[in-house]
Length: 454
Image (tube, rainbow, N blue to C red; front, side):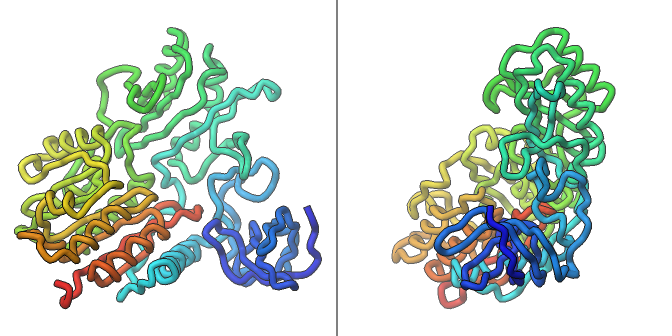
């Protein structure tokens, strides 16, 4: 690594929360730990023809938005946890960075500018993470077990004693979990513990590569009673997950605004942040403006997180999802909440769509789209092509689309298709701070069919 003695002025943050500056040669330098407006000296770790990657070593002018990190394991030091990247930046500034990232992506990648910028959705910055995948390893040289996230840029597990982004009662469990695993007969064959916290139940899924001994099962039960944990066991893939002991409360989360309870398995996809999810669902439905006469399609519907709230307002909702298991869970949840008559669910590969398939699902007044990081390219392409067909029978494109995104790049690409090929306007867009202290950008955008196109 090379020390750079010149002082660099940081101009912006990139998507990985690295400071961006230019050196005397005009080359871009990405600087870990630096914030916009700061003057820093750096140590260069990687050199390429067009850019360099470096770590901050000295700070001369500090940003007014720099704050003391809330976790002792955050930082650039050896062994630092890699779970968070922005704890040194004030949380309101983090939200502003994510909003700007969304707008920049929409414009530079999709040539789309929203007519209205929505107020960002944000909530508690600490104790928010209801889902987490914690790695487990018995380190023989240290004579102890580590449970936590990986170190920054490393395959090693950070020596975490607390984690302020986890719920407080789960953070307080980290050291007891280490002691538990250390006491178990199969400590060498337990690579992962997955957290899934519901509204009333805290579930932990133990991945085990060999069958557990009776003594180990009793240790898990004793830990569960002491710490209020519901244990699930996973001997192989996600479909092998089962409760350690049947009975007890059901793992679920509530959407109080709509009077809904959503049971789920700990390996089902649910949002990481329950508080933000509840606010996001309410915002999405207000933007969707579903009427009692509307038919709505919810694409990538998962276990019905948006479908069931929509069903409380619309005439009928069709939920479409790639996973058969989640479609089954959606049907169960609709029945449990008294909405089976207003909902239908089908499983389909949404990454292989044609205009003909799209039209077979029938006419819908409105769409909600909530894809994974890959976005909804095939769906948006099929819609754009269908909009250009001269004979579509009684099918017509939806008048309004609400798109919930976890990747601003793929949202921007899909927005470009909707606006420039399918005849929609992007009437609103805004950031959602689902993952405080990380560079992860969630967002929501609204598209309306342009009058001329309609």
